[in-house]
Length: 214
Ligand code: G16
Ligand code: MG
Image (tube, rainbow, N blue to C red; front, side, top):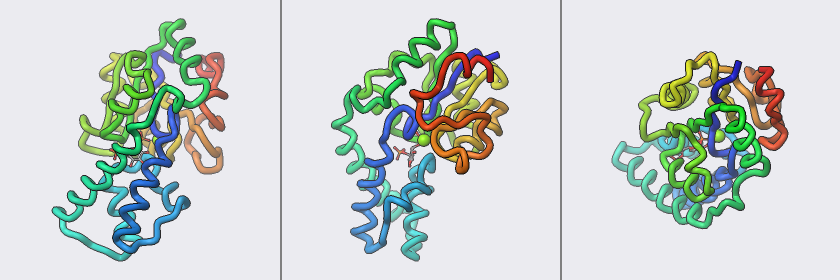
């Protein structure tokens, strides 16, 4: 039975991927690296350093750690400017309704995000108070597909992993959920998100009945 649902943030509750894309694209342009929206798909759920290194590798560049740190800081400053405009209107449809149903059934709500900006984003979305526990990239050493962020969320919720369902839009995230010993629900394309028990096109398609039957 399900006692907690742990959600990924970017791509599940809101579409911040487009802002990550704009910010990485601006940086890539400066470095003379061609970075497309298709490339950005590869970076979903990948942490900041992993994303930067993916782009640098595409451009055949290897930089010092100090240079990497400077570029990550530059990208993040730009990203923060872009997400400063986020309001509750940026929540994907159906999120609030699903949260209400989960609460009514005494099912805890957690967050497991690879983003260091997760707390800021959920604050802007107006849903920060809905979470029983928020785990993000600031608290973990190993990023998805490592299960650490999901296990931290379960611990924070005081629910054993086998009673948790994880919801993810990235393949690395689905792998993290499975490695945590939880049940994985995918948001996106079933052909891409192999390893998920069920895949829905969007959060609004998830029904409580189906969650309870997982
Ligand atoms: C998110 C995004 C990734 C992003 C990562 C780190 O993960 O999907 O594209 O690179 O966070 O973000 P930041 O630079 O803000 O720390 P998630 O797990 O919420 O999908
Ligand atoms: Mg995601």
